Amino acid sequence: MNPASAESPPAGLAGTVSSRPEPPGAGRWSHGRWLMLVALAYAAHVIMLFAFGGRKEIVPRPVTWVPTLQLADDADEWLALNDPTLFALPHSQDFASAMRVHTPAMKPPSFRWTEPPGDLSLSGEKLGTTFNEFMQTNRFAGIELQLKPPLNFSAPGLPIEPVLAQTSTLAIQGDVAQRPLLNQINVPSLPYNDVIAPSKVQVVVDAAGNVVEAVLLPADNPLEAAVRFEEADRRALELARTARFVPASHLTVGRLVFNWHTVPLSKTNEPDR
Image (spheres, rainbow, N blue to C red):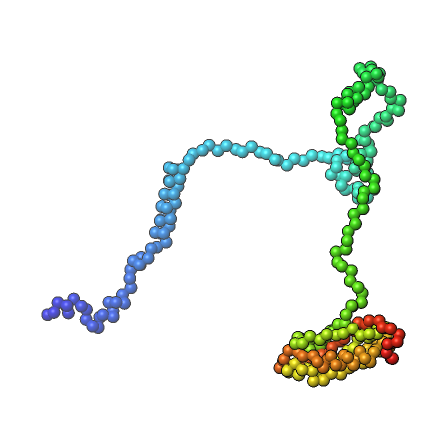
């Protein structure tokens, strides 16, 4: 017979042996054991306190700042706060009344004061003796008072230029002013006994820099039209056509303004207007 088979229970009884209930108290502690453990821990704590704790005699603390009750009389300041007119009407205990009552009395000065008598230690004959000796031993340089100092004339920093130009000038305006001139245009002075208005010529410059069109512009106002001179306008058109500018990639439009300077001439050679 196999010993293993002899020790193991029969197959039919296996479920009966495993389902047998355990005895009470075998898996967890009861309430009595827990109470016993807590009592032992508390007793050990008390024993340690008495064994290692310091023993100091209990001394009662002195009693301080004890509230007291005291009856106030009618003159107490706290009772005066119940008065609704304390800050609205004059009061005997306010600041102004206290200053008026306790103001010290000022003794008026006496106007019959006289200097106490005293003897002078220096006679009147010796007054000024020290100052005279100081002036004799110290010589001071004389100071000359310049009541009228000399005038300092200064020349103007910039030279005074004449109001009118001394020669005829040319001004370039518009887009054509961005292209410099290649030739020099000499604008002459015209013989005339009066002022000549500027001659304004509108020019069209091609890509090569040549003036392809020159047109004389009219006067801007009647006053300028009254002082126009036909000879000056003709010379302006001739000079404008001779202008040469720096080449560009496109046509340019602008104005040439000739400001004329005149020189006087005799009556026999005066041109007709």
